[in-house]
Amino acid sequence: MPPILDVRQYTKRFDMHVLNGKRIHALSNVSFSLEPGELVGLVGTSGSGKSTLMKSIYRTYLATSGAILYQSLRYGPIDLVRATDHQIIALRRDEITYCSQFLSVIPRVPAVDVVAESLFRQGIDRDRGQQQSRDYLDRLGLPQELWDAYPSTFSGGEQQRINVARAIIARPRLLLIDEPTASLDQRTKDVVIDMIVALKAGGTSVLCISHDRYTLDRLADRRIELQDGHVVAASEPVS
Amino acid sequence: MTNTSDTWLLKVEGLTKIYGEPNENSVRLTGPLFGSNICPETDCIVACADINLELFPGEVLGVVGESGSGKSTVVRLLYFDLESTAGVAYFSRYGNGTLNILNESGQKKRYMRNHLMGMVYQNPKDGLNFRFSSGGNIAEKLLMAGNFNVGRIRERATELLEQTEVPVRRLDDSPASFSGGMQQRVQISKAIANNPPLLFLDEVTTGLDVSVQAKVLDMIRTLQQELGIAMIVVSHDLSVIRMLTDRTLVMKNGRIVEQGLTDQILQDPQHPYTQLLVSSLL
Ligand SMILES: Nc1ncnc2c1ncn2[C@@H]1O[C@H](COP(=O)(O)OP(=O)(O)O)[C@@H](O)[C@H]1O
Ligand SMILES: Nc1ncnc2c1ncn2[C@@H]1O[C@H](COP(=O)(O)OP(=O)(O)O)[C@@H](O)[C@H]1O
Ligand SMILES: [Mg+2]
Ligand SMILES: [Mg+2]
Image (cartoon, rainbow over all chains, first blue to last red; front, side):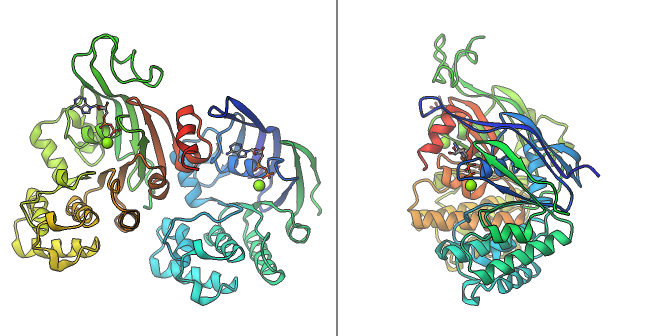
């Protein structure tokens, strides 16, 4: 089987026209692949380009050069660098989810609906979507009185649980997840890790950024390290 | 909101609107490169030119840009408020998408406006008749689409006002006596009265108080999700675009300078003008 994700010679440069043409070389010739059902941990110091790589795969960032080959259920092999915006929208709805480091939500939408959003987008009816959402919030230990409140007012740890729940609820084929356990206590951290393990057992491939040793020890099949936008080390699969 | 289709609802190519007398250089000598939409040779105004876009069913497309960049012109051309100078537009819900809707007769255009499109203007006075009651305004749109049953019209008007959170007891009052936010709600009720697959929204929250603005935006979002209407949302305000849209076109001096997924436009803008626009939001 081909890798589900194959990043080839990916380069990303930011050209800041408003800042006197300042250029930031965020990623240079990055190549790596992710096998189906594999979880790769993405590590590196702050500013090394981890989030940039993830956002590039999700197409929030546009490539400077290179290719990102993804094996899609809907489209077959597709280069995410060159796919149309409408193809990306369909992939985000049905196959690929991204969980950013910090929650950013539409204001004045209650937590249950924030979490269920991807289900609604897939056409699942409101009641069923909300039911599943409550189930996740319950397992993540979010106090029941917060379920119908607006997440913008939540604490860091509460927001993070919302963020993780909304990214995994629809059981994506490819999950891009940035620091899923950073502001969680040990018990909640374990719940999140167990959820990702279960997702993986169901066939989801995962790229996970984390600074947390414990999280990566429990989750990662192998690690890729970035430094100044270059891949400096890639470990072999543990098995 | 669920968009399972792989084909467009609306497809626009080369849409152009010029005021005054253009010559063969007018389009070439205007636009972002020249920082102006006024032709240096004839003084004609190229309000928009070379506009290409595809809107998918149930999709929300944003159009953002500074005042005078041509945003309203684009939606007004597509809603037939204005006559285009050049360009074609196809609408999959009309003539199987094979006819240039811009070239159809006035009667056919009225049919499309009444049955298949809705428009919400920045100024409620452009979309509502203040001499009619709010119910009367909605009735007008329903009548135009051939619904003549008075009982049924009243029922539908009530339902729409409920949906847009306008107190139903105000059904028989003129919108002239309403607050700005409520006038916009009535305008939205009217625009969606016939369940159109396509809705244009032109700066609908501009000029409203921030708290009122938030409520109107929430309502538009909810309606969009419940009804799955495709929308073109025009706004100079990136926070409105961020909240409502999937994809965004950025306009300057009558041209599209950049288009992309809304999160990409906001986080990795490519064009210098878009970068300026986004940096002013931060
Ligand atoms: N949207 C952006 N615009 C400009 N520069 C960016 C943007 N995103 C990231 N960068 C730059 O790219 C480099 C890598 O950042 P990032 O990917 O966030 O690192 P990490 O996630 O490893 O901490 C940094 O120099 C950062 O400033
Ligand atoms: N009736 C008209 N006659 C001449 N110029 C016009 C007319 N209507 C609009 N324009 C010009 O067309 C350009 C685009 O206007 P408009 O589409 O309203 O911009 P926006 O909605 O982005 O603010 C502006 O320069 C405007 O002055
Ligand atoms: Mg980061
Ligand atoms: Mg305007």
